Image (cartoon, rainbow, N blue to C red; front, side, top):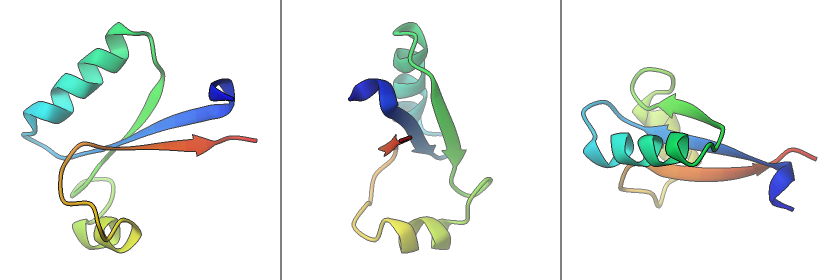
Length: 65
């Protein structure tokens, strides 16, 4: 169920779409964890984890069971 899901937002600096997504999640009262690529995680590590992703933000729902 959704109540067991954690939202992880991968973002980058100077990204208007990232800012808009985070604002929307905050407005909706959704808790999320932000990982800034290039700060919290290297670009190389991000591409290793998500080789098909080419746009930001990238949202992952993690099951916390």
